[in-house]
Length: 282
Ligand code: GLU
Image 1 (cartoon, rainbow, N blue to C red):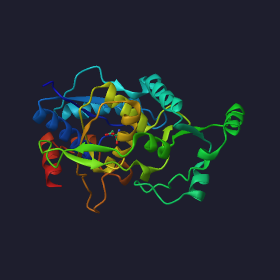
Image 2: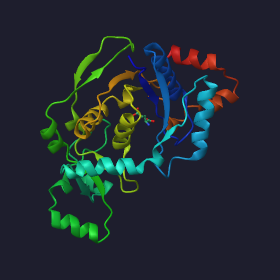
Image 3: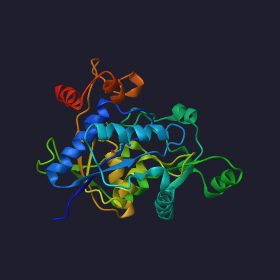
Image 4: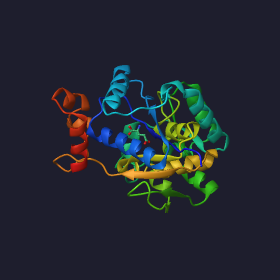
């Protein structure tokens, strides 16, 4: 059997904190148990928030944690051509449409919320005629491109995927995907020709990833990824969702809540063993 590839795929939009350390360690540990290799991928599509110094800090922090990966490291900012090609395939299937709505438009007309708690897109621009779309684009109106999730599901039929856990060596379980709860997700943003969902699916396939290890906060998003894989004819992936580290308030650790970065902990004298102990305690 070939050696399975896994990946750790942080976004360099801030310093890594303990939650990232957990995710990275779960990935390298799973690779070891499966006799595979963990790759590193830099998810830097967000031109405003991602910074080269955060990427350098990721390399440094991971090395400090004792982790290593094969070079070259894939950087999503260098792969816009591949994302455009995937979006074109979906467009040719009639599954991608331009959306001119602003955040305020969507908030005003939202029909409930998606699994992340964001306003669910009401499908306004799905109903625009071809002539109106073309006229607005020709006028230079900025559009993002959305997946027509209902039409996509009509094409694929019901979807399932394989989940492994709580241990990476557990027996696989089959789970149904429910992409419809996300509505028509954005696959190409106004500022870049891709989105998190599109890039992650294209790149997991391009890198030959067999197992995705990710936090439970990304569990629901997997439904969209499975749908995109099926539409684009990409290989199936096995998923392992790990628990999230929580702060004293019971909330997920995050930069915005001021969780200390790994670098700050290191500067305070923490060792790699201290990090591991803290992660295990949680
Ligand atoms: N880049 C994503 C993040 O930092 C994780 C990638 C994934 O597992 O899909 O949250």
